[in-house]
Length: 322
Image (tube, rainbow, N blue to C red):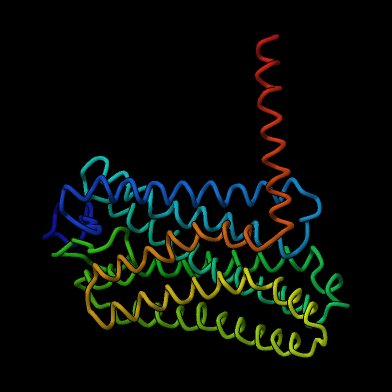
């Protein structure tokens, strides 16, 4: 590694969670299991929604997009970490690090945008049910997702290009399991004032702004639910947004916990451990939260898995005849 030359940085070292050799197999097995559960669970959600015509509604359209983004989000960081443990190497190339930052920011912010769009969908469904089908038409749903992608791509591109202008000339050890933007800025030996300004402004507008929108939507939803006279009506209205509210709380609380814990302890390792909650655990729990509390999703999953179970014997028999 050429640490003395600013213009020829070849790689960084990801220190991960622990340097003890005895813990590496345990960490590898744990994260491999969580990654496979997250990917398979979210893929099942996507397949169930796509194959069941009853779920071709705005709410499940956004849920399918969220599941796809969660698969991409976990795939941005975990496979590289698993490969490094398997090969007993901590290295990641400079280009690989910048690429990881780009996609990490892209899918993290896209997760936030989709959660905000889903909150708006629930707001229209509960507060303006008579206008729901007109307001949440396929054209608007498509535009909401498309605009979210465009804004996130532009933000991620800006953050990555600004990171490229930095010089790294000494300590190139990243105390994390992936290339996190804040950690990269701390390693730079050039002026990072502009990078920090852009990063914090993006955090305020692209994370804080949607969070305010979610709070506003749910304040209106709660007031509408309180206005329902029957207890059964209140329960039905609340159950339609309980899963989404659980995911929002889990995602934002864990992300906020990461930054509060790192600010309080000033420990990068504790920040890396806390980051696991919203980078791995939350995407892994999404399918369970949405399927356990949603009878329509349970029915679609049973129908999809039933079709797959019936299809395999037929395929095997056809192969025997051929």
